[in-house]
Image 1: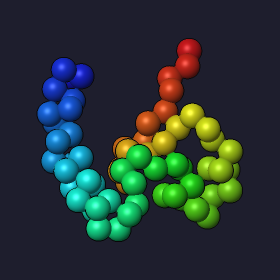
Image 2: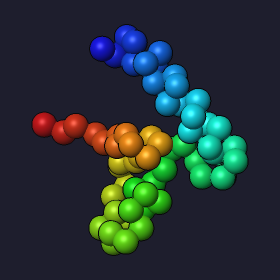
Image 3: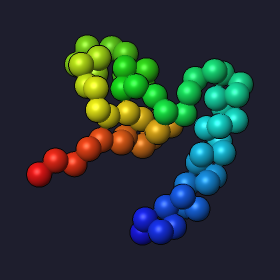
Image 4: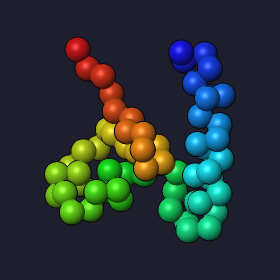
Amino acid sequence: MTSNLHADLTPYIKSYAYAASITGIPIIRALFLETPADAKTWEVPDSYFFGAELLVAPVVA
């Protein structure tokens, strides 16, 4: 899965790169940019959105 992840995400990345060039909203976004009404998102330092659909967060055992 991870070996093709970048290739699989290429259309997604390109679409958000284009949108970022038009709107100025970055591809990598703090949680509060996507969910500004949720005050708890301002307190999360180690997670982010990659575009609007992919949440990136550490996995801790």
